Length: 256
Image 1 (cartoon, rainbow, N blue to C red):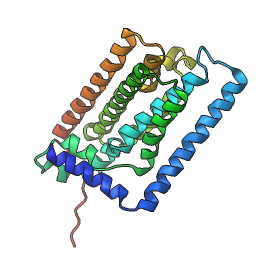
Image 2 (cartoon, rainbow, N blue to C red):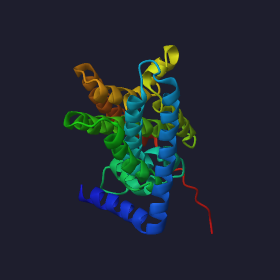
Image 3 (tube, helix red, strand yellow):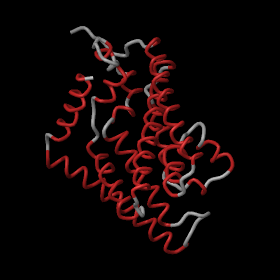
Image 4 (tube, rainbow, N blue to C red):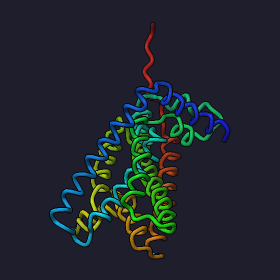
């Protein structure tokens, strides 16, 4: 555990080393988030509600989404890179260390820009999420569970590279599709798309159900959110472990 803590601390210090670059990247992401929020405020100012969603619920969803991406992709940026790392042979050095390979890999890199999301999400919730002590607890738990779902899903996708080859393109495509679906209220979609959001692309468990949990608490939503987090965390670890059994270095060795 001490090795993993030290690894994460080193990754953060590397991101923090260039203060000007750090704050510039964080500021750009916050500005991007503010523009997205402004769009939705203007949109709902014109239409009022969409399938039961109003501006407060959508801003709550965006607060959860920003917090989830900040937690999962900002603090643990390598969850998106596992497929590419496997293809490039970057896992070789990790497997020689006396640590949990998966935990070590995802702790090795911090994405500075997405730390802007991690800062913006809670602030947006406090400003526009109608916070109460109970809702705040649910917001934190929902965001943590959403982050666990996203991380587990991306680890599983990236680990497929070790099983079937390639350079992890499927992981990036899966991430982009899931992120797009996670940006919109759950009730906007129906039919096949909504089914996909609960199965192949777990966008519903990343933002939709956590938003519902905070806005209108029910035990059913609580169990669904917590259960999905445990399920996808276990899935990611299981597929990564299976992939390691078939992993062969992708590193290229040439003679001098």
